[in-house]
Image (cartoon, rainbow, N blue to C red; front, top):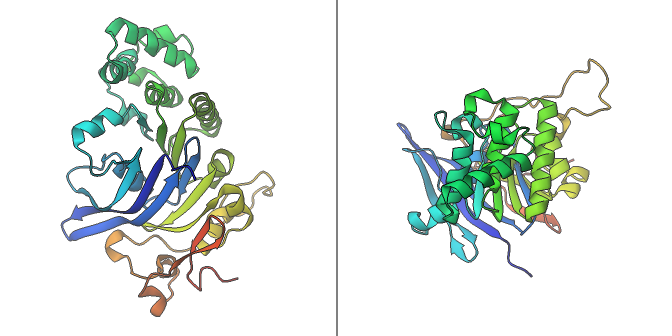
Length: 325
């Protein structure tokens, strides 16, 4: 078998707090094959972004820590390599699209200069050539009057336009892997679909793989090859997308799917919600954390259920309460 482009094994990420060190992602393992789109899906606070940002060691500082694990990219461990070498990979062979473009873009630097800077830094080209390439990239992501927009500052662009700028920056060096951290969260539905379609098109053109972080199962169904469902710092289920939607096994996965808004939903229907709330990391139990949310008691909260492969490529945390019929 061909080795995956990225192979993550036993990754544990934690944050220092005044009350101690609390893991927010525990024993995470997954692969991303070349050209594939793999999703991590779950509610806010489940540990999705912490998992993704740890791969390039971009955790918030001070406080963010990688306690264990590896992330093998072309036979090299991203989590262990010298920071100088990792900086050559960030924005070059692996790029990120962040969910908040106003935080990711420099408010006092022109759009064109910010894209050109990536090319100058990683490709070593001259300023004039980099500027022309930045304009071309803005055209590629369907920004009208690209030459004029390149002169603008981030505050003068709409949210959708700013997200397109981030995509242009992410694709500037033709990366092998794109990490997209909820890239459409702050956008309305129409612009969201435009951004996702653009990202699909750009990925096809480059042949790039993608790690997509999202809370939206609808986005997963239309854009991904494989999906991991994350709850309270752990993967509770993972499967090829079609398999997961046809045969969801874990109770949390099924609850997420019931909360989706579908075209056949009757007018003024009551939307399905998941009872309870996600416990804060300091209150996590060792056992099944979805049972903790639902108020169950006893041995099920004491020891983590084993993760089993129920069909080829379909894994589930086998809590008897959460996987039973």
